[in-house]
Each structure stands twice: as structure tokens, then as C-alpha cells.
Amino acid sequence: MKITAVDPFYLRMPNITTAADGTQDTLLVRVRTDIGLEGWGECDASPLVSLTVYCCPMSHGNIINIRTSLIGETLDSLDDVLRLSEKVLRNGLDIQQIEHAYSGAEIALWDVIGQKSEKPVYRLLAELSNTSEMAHPKLPYASVLFGDTPAATYQIAVGLRERGYRAAKFGWGPMGKFGETNDIALVQAAREGMGTDAQIMIDAGVVWGTDHETAYQRAEAFAQFSPTWLEEPLAPDAIDAYGSLTKKNPSVPIAAGEGSNTYRMAEDIIVHGGIQFVQIDAGRIGGIMPSFQVRQLAEEHGTQYVNHTFKSHLSLAAALHVFATNPDFNLLEYPAAGSELSQRLVTEPFPVESDGMVRVKELPGLGVKVNTEAIRPYLSPVQIEVGTEKVFEQPPLA
Ligand SMILES: [Mg+2]
Image 1 (cartoon, protein in one colour):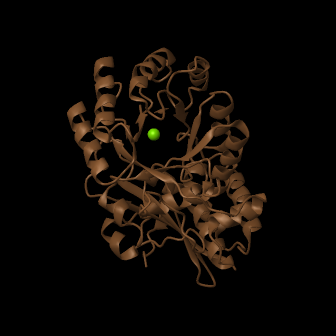
Image 2: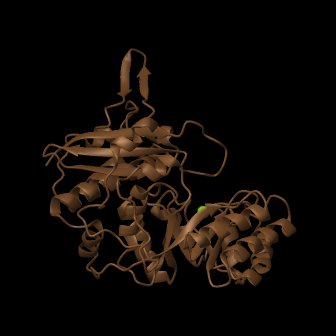
Image 3: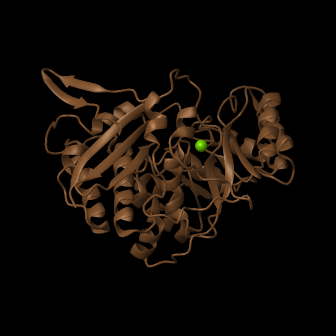
């Protein structure tokens, strides 16, 4: 089978705000082949910057775009996926955002190979690594932003509880911006709204930068509300500060890793940052394979792997395949309040089943289908011209 097309699509809501809501727009990538199979992937990265990585004219031998690297290539097996990943990253060596951008195409390649071999992606990963092929259910935690006030946060928590969530993460918004008293009140509101028997997680949204002292104080202050973790209290690359923080053994476990743009960054924060939960976004780190490698490293280090997913259920599918076969990594970030665009993006989203759990789909490839009709209104066609040359013209969605 040959790759005949690699098409990026930029989709957006009519109004984009400054809220830390990554579902307001997105970059989808479709890979087509000469036998009619097609796969899809989604990037969690600046969509238009990433789109250019698919089409920017060659600068020299280390700046060759993703389409040029992939179109016309043979795609028959997983070996081809791994070979093509190497090629794309080598050709784009000097493109800063190459891993972010390539994530969408990499995920789409796995989707194609899964369909061709009639196996779910998680099973291909199990075969590749000689590990268990049994998938395990995950406990979804609703992933939402803090309300602007403790009272608003309480209402959000009550709403999630009424929808049946037994775990929820509250993040960003006012956390860390109005002093310790307000920070504590926000966490208290989340706990009281969710109830004492639920799991809550706190996402500080990198607000304390490199200030590990304040991060430690907050972790101690939040401990009375028993959060499962305190996430990203520090900047993604503040590895030394993470190391200083975790050496003090704060009473609340520390989570981080969604900012890992490469496997190497994730390795750094696990090994030198000493975090207890590593959160990886397959749509950012370069796709399914580097995510799976972080999962394996987490297993070696006794770190718990969790997905980072704040996009559509296409991203959720990719995320889930990566760690479906590890029964101990049992928490799943589940986008619960995304934009209309993100909610309509796949035809059949992952349901929370009657036992409160989410399961990977036993279907070939990723197991989800992009709803091209439903997302058409959000398509924002892109054209790029350089001089007289048309570098990119939006292909049709269907
Ligand atoms: Mg986060």
C-alpha cells in the first residue's frame, strides 16, 4: 500500500477566547492510501503553526516538510510506521515543532495499519512489545477548568457529581493568582462539590513557574482535602525545581508531563523531576510510539502513567490504546466540558459505561470515526502562498 495523501485540517469555533481551553480549535490530519484505507489523527498543539510543518517549502536538507516525507511512501506494516517516523523526524530535524505536528500523522498511520491488519492499536503495541494483549477498563476523571470563584467551582463540581463522575480534575483559571486563601478555598469547593467519596485532582496550570517553595506550601495546604495529585505546579521544563519539590516528599503526590514535546523531556521529568504521575499527550509528544515508550519507562520507574487529553475523543482513542493493557494505570483523563467542535468530532464518543468505567474499542485501528459532516461548519480553510507558488490549498473534507 502507498500513501497518496497527507491532509491537515484546521477547525475552529467561531470565537476564540483566552481561557485555557484547548478544544476551541484543532488540527486534524488525514492519511489516505491507494487501496482506499484512511486514518485520522489529532494534534494538541498550536494548529496553524503545526499545519505549516506539513507544507513549508524546503529550506535545506534538515527542513523538509511532513508531506514531502510521507507521500508516495510504502505503508504495509508497523515496521513502515516506525521507519517513516524516523524519516519524518530526520527530515525535519531543524523544525522546532516537528514532534507536535507529526503527532497527528503518526496516529493516523497507526489507524491505517490497525485497519489493514484488522486489529486494535493496543493489540499491535502488545505484539510489538511482547506484553499482555488484555485491555483493562479505566476510571474516567472529568477534566474541567476551575470556576472563576470558589462558589462557581462548587457548582461545577456538583454538576459533575450529578452526571455520575466519581473523579474530577479542576485546573487553571484563578488557581495561584489571588493568594493562598483563595487557592485553598478553590480546592475546598471542589472537594465539597464532589463529595468525600470522590477523587479530586488539582491542576495548578504551571502557575508557580520555578518557585518550588510555594508549590510545596500549597501541596501541604491542599492535603487536608486529599487530592489524588497536584498537577503542574511548576513550568514544564523546570526539571530542577521539580526535583527540589519532590525531594521534600510533599503530602500530595506531584503530577506533570503534558508539556513533554519529546520522549526525552518526559524521561527527564520522570528521572530527574521525581514526579509520581506522568501525563503524556500522544497528540503532542510525537504520537503513539513515543507515548508508549514513556509508558514503558514509567513502568520501570514505578511512576504512574496517565494520559493527557484535552481535545476530542479522537485524541482520547489514541491516548487509551497506549496504556489500555496496564491494569495498574487505571485513571483516564476524560474531556468532559469541551467545545461543541470537540464533542461532535467523532461519530461515536467513548461512553462512560454502567460500571462507571471507560473501555478501549475492540475495533480495528483507533476504533473511532471522524464525523466529517458534523465538523464541516467548523472547517476554516487555509491557503498559503509564497511568492507566486501555492504552498498549501485546503483539500476537501470528504
Ligand atoms: Mg494539566
